[in-house]
Amino acid sequence: MRRACRALLALAVVAAGSGPAFGQVSLVGDWTGRYHEDQPDRVPGVEPNDYSGLPVNEAARLFADSWDVERTTVLEHQCQPYTMPYLFHGPLQFRIWEERQPDSQELLALKFYIGTYQQWRTIWLDGRPHPPDYAPHSFVGFSTGEWNGDILTVTTTHLKAGYFRRSGIPNSDRATVVEHFMRHGNVMSHVTIATDPVYLTEPYIRSQEFVVMDRGNSNWLYNCEYVNEIPRPRHQVPAFLPGKNPWLTEVGLKYAMPQEAVRGGAATTRPEYVENIRSGRATSAVGVPATAVPDQVGVAPGDRPTSVPAGEVRSVHVQGNLHMIVGAGANVAVQVGPDGVVVVDPGSGAMAEKVLAAVRQLSDKPIRWVINTTFRPDHIGGNEVVSFAGKTVNGNVAAVVAHENANLRMIAAKVPDRGRPYNTFFEDSRDFPYNGEPVILTHAGTASSDADLMVFFRRSDVIVTGDLFKTTDYPVIDLANGGSVAGSIAALNRILELAVPSKLLQDGGTLIIPGHGRVSDEADVVEYRDMLVIVSERVKDMVERGLTLEQVKAARPSLDYDGRYGAPTGPTSSAAFVESLYADAVAARRGSASAGGAR
Image (cartoon, rainbow, N blue to C red):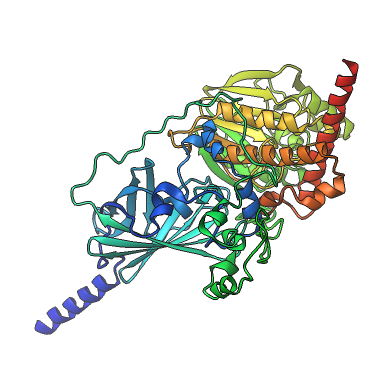
Protein backbone atom coordinates (compact mmCIF):
# COMPACT_ATOMS: atom_id res chain seq x y z
CA MET A 1 0.00 0.00 0.00
CA ARG A 2 2.80 2.43 0.92
CA ARG A 3 4.62 1.60 -2.34
CA ALA A 4 1.43 2.27 -4.28
CA CYS A 5 0.92 5.62 -2.53
CA ARG A 6 4.52 6.61 -3.24
CA ALA A 7 4.06 5.69 -6.91
CA LEU A 8 0.88 7.75 -7.16
CA LEU A 9 2.59 10.71 -5.46
CA ALA A 10 5.51 10.46 -7.90
CA LEU A 11 3.10 10.44 -10.84
CA ALA A 12 1.31 13.50 -9.41
CA VAL A 13 4.61 15.38 -9.08
CA VAL A 14 5.57 14.54 -12.66
CA ALA A 15 2.13 15.56 -13.92
CA ALA A 16 2.28 18.85 -12.01
CA GLY A 17 5.76 19.56 -13.34
CA SER A 18 4.70 18.90 -16.95
CA GLY A 19 1.44 20.86 -16.77
CA PRO A 20 1.40 24.12 -18.73
CA ALA A 21 2.22 27.28 -16.81
CA PHE A 22 1.25 26.09 -13.33
CA GLY A 23 4.51 26.84 -11.52
CA GLN A 24 5.51 30.10 -13.14
CA VAL A 25 5.62 33.50 -11.51
CA SER A 26 2.36 35.45 -11.67
CA LEU A 27 2.18 38.59 -13.82
CA VAL A 28 -1.26 39.51 -12.51
CA GLY A 29 -1.71 43.06 -11.26
CA ASP A 30 -2.02 46.73 -12.15
CA TRP A 31 1.24 48.02 -13.61
CA THR A 32 2.63 51.45 -14.42
CA GLY A 33 5.83 52.56 -16.11
CA ARG A 34 9.05 53.03 -14.19
CA TYR A 35 10.64 55.89 -16.09
CA HIS A 36 14.14 56.10 -14.60
CA GLU A 37 15.48 54.76 -17.91
CA ASP A 38 14.96 56.63 -21.21
CA GLN A 39 12.61 59.13 -19.58
CA PRO A 40 12.81 61.73 -22.40
CA ASP A 41 11.90 59.08 -24.96
CA ARG A 42 9.20 57.38 -22.89
CA VAL A 43 7.28 60.34 -21.45
CA PRO A 44 7.64 63.62 -23.37
CA GLY A 45 8.79 61.71 -26.45
CA VAL A 46 11.99 61.81 -28.45
CA GLU A 47 12.59 64.85 -30.62
CA PRO A 48 11.65 64.69 -34.31
CA ASN A 49 14.39 63.72 -36.78
CA ASP A 50 16.40 61.82 -34.16
CA TYR A 51 16.96 58.32 -35.56
CA SER A 52 19.98 57.52 -33.38
CA GLY A 53 20.17 54.05 -31.92
CA LEU A 54 17.84 52.56 -34.53
CA PRO A 55 18.92 50.03 -37.19
CA VAL A 56 16.88 51.84 -39.85
CA ASN A 57 17.41 51.74 -43.61
CA GLU A 58 17.12 54.49 -46.23
CA ALA A 59 13.43 53.78 -46.74
CA ALA A 60 12.73 54.47 -43.06
CA ARG A 61 14.82 57.63 -43.17
CA LEU A 62 12.91 59.02 -46.15
CA PHE A 63 9.59 58.22 -44.45
CA ALA A 64 10.70 59.96 -41.25
CA ASP A 65 12.24 62.91 -43.11
CA SER A 66 8.86 63.50 -44.74
CA TRP A 67 6.87 63.11 -41.52
CA ASP A 68 5.36 66.36 -40.25
CA VAL A 69 4.13 66.47 -36.66
CA GLU A 70 0.95 68.10 -37.98
CA ARG A 71 -0.02 64.74 -39.46
CA THR A 72 -1.22 63.76 -35.99
CA THR A 73 -3.93 66.42 -36.37
CA VAL A 74 -5.51 64.63 -39.37
CA LEU A 75 -8.87 63.31 -38.15
CA GLU A 76 -8.15 59.65 -38.90
CA HIS A 77 -4.74 59.87 -37.17
CA GLN A 78 -5.70 61.79 -34.04
CA CYS A 79 -6.84 58.83 -31.95
CA GLN A 80 -4.60 56.11 -33.36
CA PRO A 81 -2.81 54.29 -30.52
CA TYR A 82 0.75 53.05 -30.75
CA THR A 83 1.53 49.63 -32.18
CA MET A 84 3.40 46.93 -30.27
CA PRO A 85 6.91 47.97 -31.40
CA TYR A 86 6.46 51.17 -29.35
CA LEU A 87 3.37 50.67 -27.18
CA PHE A 88 5.05 49.50 -23.97
CA HIS A 89 7.85 52.03 -24.28
CA GLY A 90 5.56 55.06 -24.14
CA PRO A 91 3.69 56.32 -21.07
CA LEU A 92 1.05 53.78 -20.09
CA GLN A 93 -0.65 51.80 -17.34
CA PHE A 94 -2.15 48.36 -17.78
CA ARG A 95 -3.87 45.54 -15.94
CA ILE A 96 -3.08 41.81 -16.37
CA TRP A 97 -5.32 38.93 -15.32
CA GLU A 98 -5.51 35.22 -16.09
CA GLU A 99 -8.01 33.20 -18.07
CA ARG A 100 -8.05 29.56 -16.93
CA GLN A 101 -9.89 26.44 -18.01
CA PRO A 102 -12.77 26.12 -15.50
CA ASP A 103 -12.23 22.44 -14.64
CA SER A 104 -8.50 21.80 -14.90
CA GLN A 105 -7.49 25.39 -14.09
CA GLU A 106 -5.00 25.20 -16.94
CA LEU A 107 -3.74 28.66 -17.83
CA LEU A 108 -5.18 29.42 -21.27
CA ALA A 109 -4.30 33.07 -21.72
CA LEU A 110 -3.16 36.29 -20.11
CA LYS A 111 -5.51 39.21 -20.65
CA PHE A 112 -4.39 42.84 -20.76
CA TYR A 113 -6.39 46.02 -20.45
CA ILE A 114 -4.15 48.89 -21.56
CA GLY A 115 -6.09 51.70 -20.02
CA THR A 116 -4.00 54.54 -21.38
CA TYR A 117 -5.20 53.66 -24.87
CA GLN A 118 -8.37 51.67 -24.04
CA GLN A 119 -7.00 48.54 -25.72
CA TRP A 120 -7.64 44.89 -24.95
CA ARG A 121 -4.87 42.39 -25.56
CA THR A 122 -4.78 38.60 -25.25
CA ILE A 123 -1.63 36.47 -25.04
CA TRP A 124 -2.72 32.93 -25.88
CA LEU A 125 -0.89 30.17 -23.97
CA ASP A 126 -2.88 27.18 -25.25
CA GLY A 127 -0.74 26.36 -28.28
CA ARG A 128 -3.05 27.79 -30.95
CA PRO A 129 -1.44 28.86 -34.26
CA HIS A 130 -1.29 32.39 -35.59
CA PRO A 131 -4.00 33.33 -38.11
CA PRO A 132 -3.42 33.29 -41.89
CA ASP A 133 -1.91 36.32 -43.57
CA TYR A 134 -5.27 37.46 -44.97
CA ALA A 135 -6.79 37.87 -41.48
CA PRO A 136 -7.27 41.40 -40.09
CA HIS A 137 -4.39 43.21 -38.41
CA SER A 138 -4.70 45.37 -35.30
CA PHE A 139 -2.62 47.79 -33.27
CA VAL A 140 -1.86 45.11 -30.64
CA GLY A 141 -1.66 42.26 -33.16
CA PHE A 142 -2.11 38.55 -32.43
CA SER A 143 0.05 37.16 -29.60
CA THR A 144 1.01 33.69 -28.43
CA GLY A 145 3.28 32.94 -25.49
CA GLU A 146 5.25 30.21 -23.77
CA TRP A 147 7.04 30.01 -20.46
CA ASN A 148 10.79 29.47 -20.27
CA GLY A 149 11.22 29.04 -16.53
CA ASP A 150 9.90 32.28 -15.04
CA ILE A 151 10.30 34.20 -18.28
CA LEU A 152 7.22 34.61 -20.47
CA THR A 153 8.21 34.81 -24.14
CA VAL A 154 5.57 36.25 -26.46
CA THR A 155 5.47 36.41 -30.27
CA THR A 156 3.18 38.98 -31.92
CA THR A 157 2.22 39.15 -35.59
CA HIS A 158 -0.65 40.75 -37.56
CA LEU A 159 0.27 44.29 -36.57
CA LYS A 160 -0.87 47.46 -38.26
CA ALA A 161 1.58 50.03 -39.57
CA GLY A 162 2.78 52.36 -36.82
CA TYR A 163 5.98 53.78 -35.35
CA PHE A 164 9.15 52.59 -33.65
CA ARG A 165 9.30 56.08 -32.19
CA ARG A 166 6.33 58.35 -32.03
CA SER A 167 8.22 61.04 -33.94
CA GLY A 168 7.58 59.45 -37.31
CA ILE A 169 10.03 56.54 -37.53
CA PRO A 170 7.84 53.86 -39.11
CA ASN A 171 7.13 50.22 -38.53
CA SER A 172 5.37 48.39 -41.34
CA ASP A 173 2.48 45.95 -41.05
CA ARG A 174 4.99 43.16 -41.67
CA ALA A 175 6.79 43.78 -38.39
CA THR A 176 7.01 40.99 -35.81
CA VAL A 177 7.68 41.56 -32.11
CA VAL A 178 9.10 39.06 -29.60
CA GLU A 179 8.72 40.08 -25.94
CA HIS A 180 10.19 38.74 -22.71
CA PHE A 181 8.32 39.47 -19.45
CA MET A 182 10.37 38.97 -16.26
CA ARG A 183 8.99 39.72 -12.80
CA HIS A 184 11.18 40.42 -9.78
CA GLY A 185 8.97 41.13 -6.76
CA ASN A 186 6.99 44.27 -7.54
CA VAL A 187 9.09 45.16 -10.60
CA MET A 188 8.65 43.71 -14.08
CA SER A 189 11.31 43.95 -16.77
CA HIS A 190 10.08 43.91 -20.34
CA VAL A 191 12.31 43.37 -23.38
CA THR A 192 11.06 43.75 -26.96
CA ILE A 193 12.86 42.47 -30.07
CA ALA A 194 11.26 43.89 -33.20
CA THR A 195 12.01 42.79 -36.75
CA ASP A 196 10.70 44.60 -39.80
CA PRO A 197 11.75 43.53 -43.32
CA VAL A 198 10.58 46.86 -44.75
CA TYR A 199 12.25 49.43 -42.47
CA LEU A 200 14.94 47.69 -40.37
CA THR A 201 18.17 46.01 -41.42
CA GLU A 202 18.41 43.94 -38.21
CA PRO A 203 16.32 43.33 -35.06
CA TYR A 204 15.71 46.33 -32.81
CA ILE A 205 16.02 45.50 -29.09
CA ARG A 206 14.56 47.74 -26.41
CA SER A 207 13.81 47.34 -22.69
CA GLN A 208 11.64 49.05 -20.12
CA GLU A 209 10.49 48.45 -16.55
CA PHE A 210 7.13 48.54 -14.77
CA VAL A 211 6.10 48.55 -11.13
CA VAL A 212 2.97 47.20 -9.44
CA MET A 213 0.44 49.81 -8.33
CA ASP A 214 -0.60 48.57 -4.88
CA ARG A 215 -3.69 50.76 -4.77
CA GLY A 216 -4.40 50.94 -8.46
CA ASN A 217 -5.24 54.16 -10.24
CA SER A 218 -8.65 55.32 -11.45
CA ASN A 219 -7.29 58.19 -13.56
CA TRP A 220 -5.46 56.23 -16.24
CA LEU A 221 -8.03 56.25 -19.03
CA TYR A 222 -7.41 58.31 -22.15
CA ASN A 223 -10.66 59.56 -23.64
CA CYS A 224 -9.87 60.55 -27.23
CA GLU A 225 -12.40 62.24 -29.47
CA TYR A 226 -11.15 63.32 -32.87
CA VAL A 227 -12.18 66.81 -33.91
CA ASN A 228 -11.19 69.20 -36.67
CA GLU A 229 -9.30 71.86 -34.70
CA ILE A 230 -7.21 73.25 -37.56
CA PRO A 231 -9.04 75.05 -40.39
CA ARG A 232 -7.81 73.21 -43.49
CA PRO A 233 -9.29 70.82 -46.06
CA ARG A 234 -10.56 67.59 -44.51
CA HIS A 235 -8.29 65.12 -46.31
CA GLN A 236 -5.02 67.03 -46.43
CA VAL A 237 -1.94 64.98 -45.46
CA PRO A 238 0.81 67.20 -43.98
CA ALA A 239 4.26 66.07 -45.14
CA PHE A 240 7.63 67.56 -46.07
CA LEU A 241 8.81 67.21 -49.65
CA PRO A 242 12.31 65.71 -50.06
CA GLY A 243 14.91 68.31 -49.11
CA LYS A 244 12.30 70.65 -47.60
CA ASN A 245 12.35 69.51 -43.96
CA PRO A 246 14.15 72.40 -42.17
CA TRP A 247 14.69 70.47 -38.92
CA LEU A 248 16.85 67.54 -40.01
CA THR A 249 20.05 68.92 -38.45
CA GLU A 250 18.47 70.37 -35.31
CA VAL A 251 19.20 67.38 -33.04
CA GLY A 252 22.83 67.14 -34.14
CA LEU A 253 23.44 70.83 -33.55
CA LYS A 254 21.62 70.83 -30.20
CA TYR A 255 23.52 67.86 -28.74
CA ALA A 256 26.79 68.17 -30.72
CA MET A 257 26.18 64.81 -32.37
CA PRO A 258 27.60 63.83 -35.76
CA GLN A 259 24.80 63.96 -38.31
CA GLU A 260 25.68 60.44 -39.37
CA ALA A 261 24.87 59.22 -35.84
CA VAL A 262 21.63 61.22 -35.76
CA ARG A 263 20.57 59.48 -38.98
CA GLY A 264 20.83 56.07 -37.34
CA GLY A 265 21.57 52.73 -38.99
CA ALA A 266 22.81 49.42 -37.64
CA ALA A 267 26.50 50.36 -37.80
CA THR A 268 25.92 53.41 -35.58
CA THR A 269 24.42 51.27 -32.80
CA ARG A 270 27.57 49.20 -32.20
CA PRO A 271 30.09 49.95 -29.42
CA GLU A 272 32.95 50.24 -31.93
CA TYR A 273 31.18 53.15 -33.59
CA VAL A 274 32.37 55.33 -30.69
CA GLU A 275 35.83 55.20 -32.26
CA ASN A 276 34.40 56.75 -35.44
CA ILE A 277 33.16 59.67 -33.36
CA ARG A 278 36.45 60.09 -31.51
CA SER A 279 38.49 59.95 -34.70
CA GLY A 280 36.26 62.42 -36.51
CA ARG A 281 35.25 59.93 -39.21
CA ALA A 282 31.55 60.18 -38.20
CA THR A 283 31.01 63.69 -39.43
CA SER A 284 29.00 65.12 -42.29
CA ALA A 285 28.19 68.52 -43.69
CA VAL A 286 25.64 70.47 -41.67
CA GLY A 287 22.30 70.38 -43.45
CA VAL A 288 23.16 67.28 -45.50
CA PRO A 289 21.59 64.00 -44.33
CA ALA A 290 24.53 61.61 -44.06
CA THR A 291 24.16 58.31 -45.88
CA ALA A 292 27.71 57.03 -45.40
CA VAL A 293 26.60 54.02 -43.37
CA PRO A 294 25.39 51.45 -45.93
CA ASP A 295 22.29 49.41 -45.37
CA GLN A 296 19.72 47.41 -47.25
CA VAL A 297 16.32 48.70 -48.27
CA GLY A 298 13.81 46.28 -46.80
CA VAL A 299 12.57 43.11 -48.42
CA ALA A 300 13.13 42.23 -52.02
CA PRO A 301 10.25 43.75 -53.99
CA GLY A 302 7.54 41.21 -54.60
CA ASP A 303 8.45 39.09 -51.56
CA ARG A 304 4.91 38.67 -50.34
CA PRO A 305 3.84 36.31 -47.54
CA THR A 306 0.95 33.98 -48.29
CA SER A 307 -0.86 31.16 -46.53
CA VAL A 308 -2.93 29.98 -49.53
CA PRO A 309 -1.26 27.28 -51.67
CA ALA A 310 -1.12 28.03 -55.37
CA GLY A 311 -4.19 26.74 -57.16
CA GLU A 312 -6.30 26.68 -53.99
CA VAL A 313 -8.82 29.06 -52.42
CA ARG A 314 -9.72 29.73 -48.81
CA SER A 315 -12.69 31.54 -47.27
CA VAL A 316 -12.81 33.66 -44.13
CA HIS A 317 -15.83 35.18 -42.40
CA VAL A 318 -15.46 38.95 -42.34
CA GLN A 319 -18.50 40.03 -40.32
CA GLY A 320 -22.26 40.10 -40.63
CA ASN A 321 -23.39 38.43 -43.85
CA LEU A 322 -20.01 38.83 -45.57
CA HIS A 323 -17.28 36.32 -46.34
CA MET A 324 -14.06 36.72 -48.35
CA ILE A 325 -12.58 34.07 -50.65
CA VAL A 326 -8.84 34.42 -51.26
CA GLY A 327 -6.58 32.73 -53.79
CA ALA A 328 -8.82 33.35 -56.80
CA GLY A 329 -6.67 36.01 -58.46
CA ALA A 330 -8.55 38.89 -56.86
CA ASN A 331 -10.46 38.76 -53.59
CA VAL A 332 -14.03 37.49 -53.89
CA ALA A 333 -16.69 38.88 -51.55
CA VAL A 334 -19.72 36.72 -50.80
CA GLN A 335 -22.89 37.86 -49.06
CA VAL A 336 -25.06 35.01 -47.77
CA GLY A 337 -28.47 35.04 -46.14
CA PRO A 338 -32.07 33.80 -46.37
CA ASP A 339 -32.68 35.49 -49.73
CA GLY A 340 -29.73 33.89 -51.47
CA VAL A 341 -26.15 34.75 -52.40
CA VAL A 342 -24.46 37.85 -53.83
CA VAL A 343 -20.95 37.43 -55.26
CA VAL A 344 -18.75 40.48 -55.80
CA ASP A 345 -15.93 39.86 -58.32
CA PRO A 346 -15.89 36.07 -58.87
CA GLY A 347 -12.15 36.06 -59.58
CA SER A 348 -10.16 34.71 -62.50
CA GLY A 349 -11.55 32.26 -65.02
CA ALA A 350 -8.98 29.63 -64.08
CA MET A 351 -10.23 29.55 -60.48
CA ALA A 352 -13.96 29.90 -61.20
CA GLU A 353 -14.93 26.29 -60.41
CA LYS A 354 -13.05 26.39 -57.10
CA VAL A 355 -14.66 29.71 -56.22
CA LEU A 356 -18.06 28.23 -56.99
CA ALA A 357 -17.31 25.23 -54.75
CA ALA A 358 -16.24 27.59 -51.95
CA VAL A 359 -19.46 29.59 -52.35
CA ARG A 360 -21.49 26.37 -52.12
CA GLN A 361 -19.76 25.57 -48.83
CA LEU A 362 -20.90 28.92 -47.47
CA SER A 363 -24.52 28.60 -48.58
CA ASP A 364 -26.81 26.23 -50.48
CA LYS A 365 -29.09 29.12 -51.42
CA PRO A 366 -29.18 30.23 -55.09
CA ILE A 367 -26.69 32.79 -56.38
CA ARG A 368 -28.90 35.74 -57.36
CA TRP A 369 -26.46 38.55 -58.13
CA VAL A 370 -22.88 38.90 -59.39
CA ILE A 371 -21.37 42.38 -59.05
CA ASN A 372 -18.24 43.53 -60.92
CA THR A 373 -16.17 46.33 -59.38
CA THR A 374 -13.98 46.58 -62.50
CA PHE A 375 -13.34 45.12 -65.94
CA ARG A 376 -9.99 43.49 -65.14
CA PRO A 377 -9.71 39.73 -65.87
CA ASP A 378 -8.50 38.70 -62.40
CA HIS A 379 -11.78 40.10 -61.00
CA ILE A 380 -14.35 39.18 -63.70
CA GLY A 381 -12.94 36.05 -65.37
CA GLY A 382 -15.30 33.85 -63.36
CA ASN A 383 -18.46 35.75 -64.38
CA GLU A 384 -19.80 33.09 -66.71
CA VAL A 385 -19.24 30.08 -64.47
CA VAL A 386 -20.65 31.73 -61.34
CA SER A 387 -23.58 33.55 -62.94
CA PHE A 388 -24.72 30.51 -64.94
CA ALA A 389 -24.55 28.41 -61.76
CA GLY A 390 -27.11 30.77 -60.19
CA LYS A 391 -30.52 32.01 -61.18
CA THR A 392 -32.86 34.90 -60.62
CA VAL A 393 -36.32 34.41 -59.13
CA ASN A 394 -37.80 34.11 -62.63
CA GLY A 395 -35.35 31.38 -63.63
CA ASN A 396 -32.80 33.35 -65.64
CA VAL A 397 -29.10 33.10 -64.86
CA ALA A 398 -27.86 35.25 -61.99
CA ALA A 399 -27.68 38.89 -63.04
CA VAL A 400 -24.20 40.40 -63.53
CA VAL A 401 -24.17 44.07 -62.45
CA ALA A 402 -21.53 46.68 -63.26
CA HIS A 403 -21.10 50.28 -64.29
CA GLU A 404 -21.62 50.86 -68.01
CA ASN A 405 -17.99 51.90 -68.42
CA ALA A 406 -16.87 48.50 -67.17
CA ASN A 407 -19.09 46.83 -69.77
CA LEU A 408 -17.62 49.03 -72.53
CA ARG A 409 -14.09 48.12 -71.44
CA MET A 410 -15.00 44.42 -71.51
CA ILE A 411 -16.43 44.76 -75.02
CA ALA A 412 -13.20 46.44 -76.14
CA ALA A 413 -11.23 43.57 -74.56
CA LYS A 414 -13.46 41.05 -76.44
CA VAL A 415 -14.85 39.43 -73.30
CA PRO A 416 -17.45 36.85 -74.46
CA ASP A 417 -21.09 37.87 -74.17
CA ARG A 418 -21.76 35.20 -71.53
CA GLY A 419 -19.11 36.74 -69.29
CA ARG A 420 -20.24 40.37 -69.51
CA PRO A 421 -22.71 42.34 -67.36
CA TYR A 422 -26.16 43.03 -68.78
CA ASN A 423 -27.43 44.94 -65.75
CA THR A 424 -25.49 48.19 -66.07
CA PHE A 425 -26.05 51.73 -64.84
CA PHE A 426 -24.77 55.20 -65.75
CA GLU A 427 -25.53 57.11 -62.56
CA ASP A 428 -23.22 57.73 -59.61
CA SER A 429 -24.78 54.97 -57.51
CA ARG A 430 -27.32 52.20 -57.41
CA ASP A 431 -28.74 50.34 -54.43
CA PHE A 432 -31.00 47.41 -53.66
CA PRO A 433 -32.04 45.52 -50.51
CA TYR A 434 -30.83 41.95 -50.07
CA ASN A 435 -30.53 39.56 -47.15
CA GLY A 436 -31.89 42.15 -44.75
CA GLU A 437 -29.49 44.97 -45.59
CA PRO A 438 -29.01 47.75 -48.12
CA VAL A 439 -26.43 46.99 -50.82
CA ILE A 440 -25.05 50.28 -52.19
CA LEU A 441 -22.99 50.41 -55.39
CA THR A 442 -21.01 53.63 -55.85
CA HIS A 443 -19.18 54.57 -59.05
CA ALA A 444 -15.74 55.95 -58.14
CA GLY A 445 -15.51 58.27 -61.14
CA THR A 446 -12.02 58.55 -62.64
CA ALA A 447 -10.05 56.56 -60.09
CA SER A 448 -7.98 53.47 -60.95
CA SER A 449 -10.00 53.67 -64.19
CA ASP A 450 -13.34 55.21 -65.10
CA ALA A 451 -15.14 51.91 -64.47
CA ASP A 452 -14.51 51.13 -60.79
CA LEU A 453 -17.17 50.52 -58.15
CA MET A 454 -17.14 50.19 -54.39
CA VAL A 455 -19.90 48.11 -52.78
CA PHE A 456 -21.16 48.93 -49.28
CA PHE A 457 -23.10 46.26 -47.37
CA ARG A 458 -24.54 48.67 -44.86
CA ARG A 459 -25.94 46.45 -42.12
CA SER A 460 -22.94 44.10 -42.14
CA ASP A 461 -20.77 47.25 -42.16
CA VAL A 462 -18.44 45.93 -44.86
CA ILE A 463 -17.09 47.83 -47.89
CA VAL A 464 -15.81 45.92 -50.92
CA THR A 465 -13.37 48.22 -52.72
CA GLY A 466 -12.12 46.30 -55.73
CA ASP A 467 -8.78 47.71 -56.88
CA LEU A 468 -9.52 51.14 -55.42
CA PHE A 469 -7.69 49.85 -52.34
CA LYS A 470 -5.22 46.98 -51.90
CA THR A 471 -2.85 45.92 -49.14
CA THR A 472 -0.45 44.07 -51.42
CA ASP A 473 0.92 46.54 -53.96
CA TYR A 474 0.80 49.98 -55.49
CA PRO A 475 -2.41 51.16 -57.16
CA VAL A 476 -2.66 50.94 -60.93
CA ILE A 477 -3.51 54.41 -62.24
CA ASP A 478 -4.85 53.33 -65.64
CA LEU A 479 -4.65 56.62 -67.52
CA ALA A 480 -5.53 54.98 -70.85
CA ASN A 481 -8.83 53.78 -69.41
CA GLY A 482 -9.86 57.00 -67.72
CA GLY A 483 -7.96 56.73 -64.44
CA SER A 484 -6.40 59.61 -62.51
CA VAL A 485 -4.38 60.22 -59.37
CA ALA A 486 -6.83 62.80 -58.03
CA GLY A 487 -9.73 60.41 -58.63
CA SER A 488 -7.92 57.56 -56.88
CA ILE A 489 -7.24 59.77 -53.84
CA ALA A 490 -10.86 60.96 -53.85
CA ALA A 491 -12.07 57.34 -53.91
CA LEU A 492 -9.88 56.44 -50.91
CA ASN A 493 -11.18 59.51 -49.08
CA ARG A 494 -14.74 58.41 -49.84
CA ILE A 495 -14.01 55.03 -48.26
CA LEU A 496 -12.64 56.83 -45.19
CA GLU A 497 -15.78 58.94 -44.97
CA LEU A 498 -17.96 55.82 -44.97
CA ALA A 499 -15.82 53.76 -42.57
CA VAL A 500 -16.31 54.17 -38.81
CA PRO A 501 -14.01 52.40 -36.30
CA SER A 502 -15.55 50.29 -33.55
CA LYS A 503 -13.74 52.30 -30.90
CA LEU A 504 -12.54 55.87 -30.77
CA LEU A 505 -9.01 54.52 -31.06
CA GLN A 506 -9.31 53.54 -34.72
CA ASP A 507 -9.51 49.73 -34.62
CA GLY A 508 -12.11 47.49 -36.25
CA GLY A 509 -15.63 48.76 -36.90
CA THR A 510 -16.30 49.02 -40.62
CA LEU A 511 -14.30 46.22 -42.25
CA ILE A 512 -12.98 46.46 -45.77
CA ILE A 513 -12.44 43.74 -48.36
CA PRO A 514 -9.71 45.05 -50.68
CA GLY A 515 -9.18 44.04 -54.27
CA HIS A 516 -6.08 42.13 -53.17
CA GLY A 517 -4.70 41.43 -49.71
CA ARG A 518 -6.03 41.07 -46.20
CA VAL A 519 -9.23 42.11 -44.47
CA SER A 520 -8.73 45.74 -43.43
CA ASP A 521 -10.32 48.68 -41.66
CA GLU A 522 -10.19 52.46 -41.73
CA ALA A 523 -6.65 52.72 -40.34
CA ASP A 524 -5.29 50.54 -43.15
CA VAL A 525 -6.95 52.70 -45.79
CA VAL A 526 -5.49 55.81 -44.12
CA GLU A 527 -1.97 54.44 -44.54
CA TYR A 528 -2.61 53.66 -48.22
CA ARG A 529 -4.21 57.06 -48.84
CA ASP A 530 -1.30 58.83 -47.14
CA MET A 531 1.17 56.90 -49.29
CA LEU A 532 -0.57 57.87 -52.53
CA VAL A 533 -0.87 61.54 -51.51
CA ILE A 534 2.74 61.84 -50.33
CA VAL A 535 4.40 60.11 -53.29
CA SER A 536 2.19 61.86 -55.87
CA GLU A 537 3.01 65.26 -54.32
CA ARG A 538 6.72 64.47 -54.56
CA VAL A 539 6.39 63.58 -58.24
CA LYS A 540 4.23 66.63 -58.91
CA ASP A 541 6.87 68.87 -57.32
CA MET A 542 9.57 67.33 -59.52
CA VAL A 543 7.47 67.85 -62.64
CA GLU A 544 6.90 71.49 -61.70
CA ARG A 545 10.68 71.87 -61.34
CA GLY A 546 11.16 70.56 -64.87
CA LEU A 547 12.68 67.16 -64.13
CA THR A 548 12.46 64.51 -66.84
CA LEU A 549 10.92 61.10 -66.24
CA GLU A 550 14.35 59.48 -66.00
CA GLN A 551 15.46 62.08 -63.46
CA VAL A 552 12.33 61.51 -61.40
CA LYS A 553 12.81 57.74 -61.43
CA ALA A 554 16.46 58.16 -60.46
CA ALA A 555 15.38 60.26 -57.45
CA ARG A 556 13.32 57.28 -56.18
CA PRO A 557 10.34 59.26 -54.88
CA SER A 558 8.60 56.09 -53.67
CA LEU A 559 11.64 54.63 -51.86
CA ASP A 560 10.05 54.64 -48.40
CA TYR A 561 7.13 52.52 -49.67
CA ASP A 562 8.84 50.30 -52.27
CA GLY A 563 9.69 47.56 -49.78
CA ARG A 564 6.03 47.38 -48.84
CA TYR A 565 4.15 47.83 -52.12
CA GLY A 566 6.61 47.60 -55.02
CA ALA A 567 6.40 44.51 -57.22
CA PRO A 568 9.57 43.54 -59.15
CA THR A 569 7.93 43.99 -62.55
CA GLY A 570 4.60 44.76 -64.14
CA PRO A 571 1.94 47.42 -63.63
CA THR A 572 2.38 47.54 -59.82
CA SER A 573 6.18 47.82 -59.87
CA SER A 574 7.81 50.90 -58.40
CA ALA A 575 8.87 52.05 -61.86
CA ALA A 576 5.39 51.67 -63.35
CA PHE A 577 3.82 53.44 -60.37
CA VAL A 578 6.16 56.42 -60.65
CA GLU A 579 5.67 56.54 -64.43
CA SER A 580 1.90 56.75 -64.01
CA LEU A 581 2.22 59.50 -61.38
CA TYR A 582 4.59 61.39 -63.68
CA ALA A 583 2.30 61.10 -66.72
CA ASP A 584 -0.69 62.23 -64.66
CA ALA A 585 1.22 65.24 -63.27
CA VAL A 586 2.46 66.23 -66.73
CA ALA A 587 -1.07 65.98 -68.15
CA ALA A 588 -2.47 68.04 -65.27
CA ARG A 589 0.23 70.68 -65.74
CA ARG A 590 -0.49 70.92 -69.46
CA GLY A 591 -4.20 71.15 -68.79
CA SER A 592 -3.62 73.94 -66.28
CA ALA A 593 -1.40 75.81 -68.72
CA SER A 594 -4.00 75.45 -71.48
CA ALA A 595 -6.74 76.72 -69.19
CA GLY A 596 -4.56 79.68 -68.23
CA GLY A 597 -3.92 80.49 -71.88
CA ALA A 598 -7.62 80.28 -72.69
CA ARG A 599 -8.39 82.80 -69.99
